[in-house]
Length: 71
Image (cartoon, rainbow, N blue to C red; front, side, top):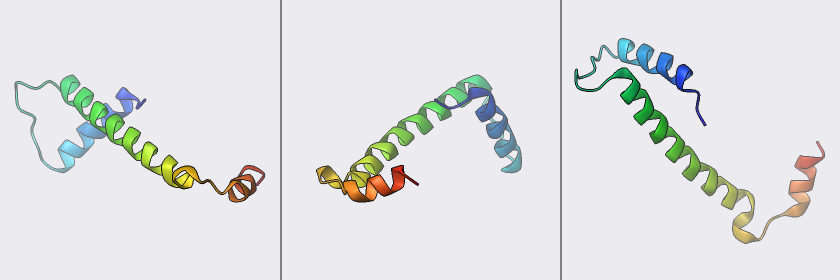
């Protein structure tokens, strides 16, 4: 879901800004992949929670939704 190349640049920049060095036994590719998986898992949970709120936990306000759809 997230662009690994974009995340690679982001992670490199943030590590530099924070003045952090990666351990030698973890490659940049491994760190990027682990972070991407972390973000994707978190994003999925965030989406589920927000969809429940959007649909008002099974009692959606269809009038309100129609207004957003037709804007």
